[in-house]
Length: 594
Image 1 (spheres, one colour):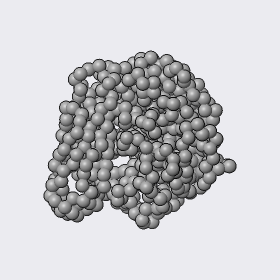
Image 2: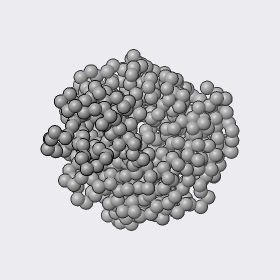
Image 3: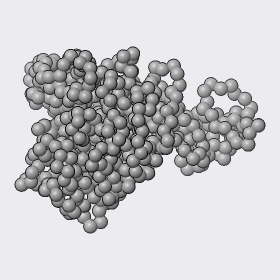
Image 4: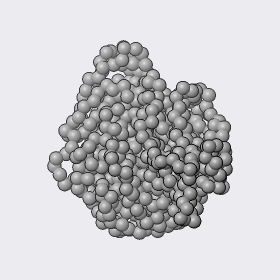
């Protein structure tokens, strides 16, 4: 695949390190970068909309050993893969969420775990003819009294967004999966779904749509809770689809330990859902439909976090953790995929960065919502993804985004230089976020992973004689998935983080030492000197815990860990969680030889 420089003011020297054609349908969700087979080389796990699922070796773009690629017949996927050790063998498995409401699991050799599957329950609704109204009401069935005027059917579930895995209930085990679900009949033909006893007709409910969240326990496969948030007809002007990944955070850590679930809908409502709350979640109504993931960050130097919501009328809303409006601003465009937060003007405060489909990248002051000086930046091409923000050359914050017509833009925010590249003569662009990680060990620095609308996965890096996308620590600047962990929207160098400094790759004793560093570059924005503790968990697989403790301060630490009693090649992960359950991880491949 050829690469053409359109503008070369930053003087990077990129080349296509490898590319892979992932079927014949578009890639509509970002891949995930992770060393899934624990061999010390990071892999790219990717799906296309309707054709394939594969795992590629990051250093070469070739398939992992096994039966790859998998051709998924009659399977449609809008969501990115997730990783979880579902069979507890200390090896990470791939979790795929299908459009038709199933969660399926695969080993890293491509074999399907047949006895491990989650099926989203259908939604049972009641249909009652209202004698005094010309319109029929579709209502949620919540143990209503049955009558001759009431009819029932079950509506199909659909997954249009990537789920999230976390410790939702605060019991210390990351085993809950939160899935945003839309229940509707996508073809208008509901006859085969009808309850024969109800005599309900297909025309009665052909346009019903419902959205909500379901939570499953991945350890036992049981449904924990199903919450329906909205219901309406397909003919409604604002349909209650939910199409973005849920954001999981503890917005009220003073009073509880479990996580809140933040969900936006195309009807313009924001929901803050708590599984243990006795009250039904009341929506916060935004002006227009919400298409991007809800961003949460500390923007105002207070004890709480702020919620950033963007809508399709170009509104950017900043809310308190209780849903109260702090500020709202209007930018441009009619489609906004979401936002990121970073300090782009070096005033030690986070700003809100977002791209609009009319070609502008905006930066708003996090405290006031006002547009920053020298912004927005007009790139003159349609932008349909969120912005990648990370540090490249000279420890400078960079902005990276691709357009829908095949251009790649890299902006050095320190020097304000702009690099513009184009792929081939008939370039096809992307609508998903670019990823950054050090996946080719032979090439120093970070590589970029792009996923395109024509089904290509492209790995970009700098030539050996180039400046390299080098940083003080590549691990601190990687962005290996659309959201860092399940609630990270800020570059690691400007937020909390943890990095493994020393750990043996081969463990042949019953105990081994690990050195790691906790850093917190967000402290410069906090007014309080009472810094909350940092909770650290070290584990292998998904939940085989080797260390579970807390530290009062950031810094360098050393701990002795107990090894296993049997040989295993696996991935050791350290997870750092702060007061609000903001989470970041680092991993290293190890071979246990006790």
